[in-house]
Each structure stands twice: as C-alpha cells, then as structure tokens.
Length: 378
Ligand code: NDP
Ligand code: MG
Image 1: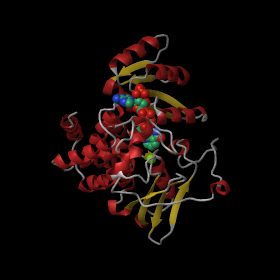
Image 2 (image 1 turned 180 degrees about the horizontal axis):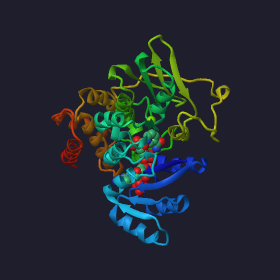
Image 3 (image 1 turned 90 degrees about the vertical axis):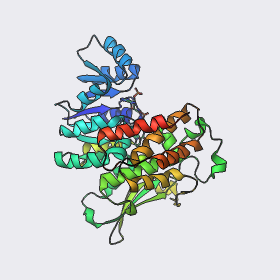
Image 4 (image 1 turned 135 degrees about the vertical axis):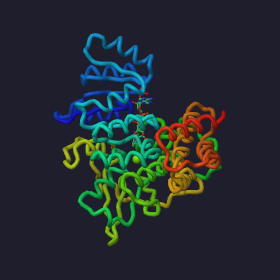
C-alpha cells in the first residue's frame, strides 16, 4: 500500500492525481488539502475517506468541519493544518500540487519527517531549492518530479551517469502567442491568455505558459532537481508538445521522452517509480502526426524567460523576486488590473530594485515575498 497526502487536491493536478488513485487499488489517500473549495473537497473526502482534510482558508475550514460532522475525519485549517498533514506518520509520499510559494513550509516539513515528495509545485523549488535539495539528500528523501518536462528528464536519466550529462534540453510549446511581437501582444485579454493550445491546466500556470515565465520557472526547477549549471540548460520550442524534454550526454547521444500531452503519465510515474503501469490514455500516432517541428525561443518578445536565467544565475533571493513578482502580477492580470505585457515588465522592475540576500533562510524568502508584494503598487 502507498499512503498519499495530496496538497492542492481540488486543482488541475490534484484532481488528476485522484483519477490516478481511482485506478490503482494499492494507493490510499490519507489526507487532502486545498485553499477554499469546500464543495469539491467535501466530495473528495466522502469518496476517498482520508483521515484528515484541511482548507487553508479558516472560514471555509469551519464550513467543511460542519459539513463533515457525520464522519470521524479530522478537519484542519491554515498553514498549521497543511504542515500537520505533511508530517502525518502514516503518509509515505506527499504530492505537492498547491499553486505558489505557499508550498514552501509544508514541503520542508514533509522532508524533515522523511516523506518522499511528488513535486508539482515548482514555485517552492524555484524559491527554496537551495534549502530543499540538500535537506532531501540529508534525510534520504526522494523528490519525484510531476512537471511533465522534469518527469521526461527524470525518465531520460534513469540508469544513466549524471556526470555524463552535457545538456538538458527543456521543450516548450511556445504558448498561445508564439510568433507574436510585443506590439501584437499589448491588448491581449484574460480570456485569450487562458486558452492554451495543448494543455489544460490551472489559471496561474496557463498565464505563465502564455508569457513563457513558466519555462523560466522550469529552467530554475531543473537546475535544482538535476544539479546542473544554467549554462547546461537549453530551451527549445516544440509546438506540438510531444517531446516532453531531452537530455544530451557527453558522447552526443540524446535521450528523450515522448507522449501525448497528458499530465496523468508524469503524475502516475512519480507515484509508481521505478515501475510503469498500464494507463488508459491516447497514445502517439506517428503516422497521423507526420511532423515534429522545432524553433528557437524568442527571448526578446518573451523576456520572462531571459529574466529567469538572469535571476537563477544571480541566485540568493533573486529567484524569489522573479517568482513573487510574477505571482502577484499574474493575479493582478487575472483581476484585469494590469495588462498582459505588464507581467514581465513588473518582474523586470522588481528585479532591478532588489538587493540580493545570499543563501536566504525560509524567513528571508518570505520577507522578500512580502517586500515584492508591498513594492508592486497598483
Ligand atoms: P490549480 O490552480 O488548478 O490548483 C491549485 C490548488 O492549490 C487547488 O487545489 C487550490 O485549492 C490549492 N490552493 C491554492 N491556494 C492554497 C492555499 N493557500 N493553501 C492550500 N491550498 C491552496 O493549479 P494547478 O493544479 O494547475 O497547479 C498546481 C501546481 O502544479 C503549480 O505549482 C503549477 O505550476 C504546477 N504544475 C501544474 C501543471 C498542470 O498541468 N496543471 C503542470 C506542471 C506543473 P482551491 O481549489 O481550494 O483554491
Ligand atoms: Mg511543465
């Protein structure tokens, strides 16, 4: 039996994780957590019967407790609740699918308590990778990537000597605005940016994909997961999203992982590694496909990607500034308070104003996040 806690169970990755659990008799849900979606988490709780459920929002948690009073489930709230779930003795693996830096503390708590992590929540690794990766090593904890590109790299590296990597090649779809100039992107509406050509995902990551900031976050995520320098991480645009990423080795050989764009495979692999299990999803039909094409990423019009490399190379609190400025700017864009191009402009401005703290503690990372939020005035 594998005992799983899902943080972010009501989201895109969370609900797909529960689909995987439904198909695997030996997976048990011990705990579920989300932000404020009482209706869905109640439904999930009644179906999966976890011991503990948590909503971050205190009022929503009260409502959930009321609704679940006919059960013996424990209902928790807030950051304390997320952390309590992350360290539950019965749990083997914590699947982190919350959106944003809120995942930092529960992820660290889980690792400190020896839990393996199936990691979708990239913002946590981007901002606190220098704390999380050494801690995982010290505690003998495995971090299994859920992000499709990183799962592809993880699969391509299986059985290989990491010292023989010459390059990690992250693929990118280019998003819905691939090929456009900034002039052509200045009037983009929220509805347009929420239409991704290949993937159906949560709102924040869908906007991140449209700006290509998502690929920037993934470059930094790859640096931490696979311990490679930024000079060895390349991005190539592959608009059909069939090659999920590649690794080039010192002899020029390249390993890639291909598949239809569907998060279920990387989610399941993170939970079954090193095994693979049958899955009832569409398969790639090469005859129908006819071509896979490639392009250079456009770093001038999609400057979020270029700024991610810059933030990553500077290190310290700069990736936190990159990430927090993006989180805030995306929320403002979704609220229709700023324009599409203001997202990467905001990141650039905040990075320009920031005085870097080297090797920051969790407290300093969270203070930097607050500084970013206070400094962005709208
Ligand atoms: P969604 O927006 O669909 O879901 C986010 C989840 O986080 C929801 O369950 C939400 O709960 C929960 N949540 C939000 N705020 C809090 C909080 N303060 N405390 C606890 N839970 C909270 O996001 P996605 O599933 O798309 O993405 C999740 C993570 O996975 C992100 O880091 C993303 O970058 C990454 N990822 C996603 C991919 C995808 O295909 N979707 C692919 C690769 C990576 P509620 O519903 O109650 O608000
Ligand atoms: Mg990805």
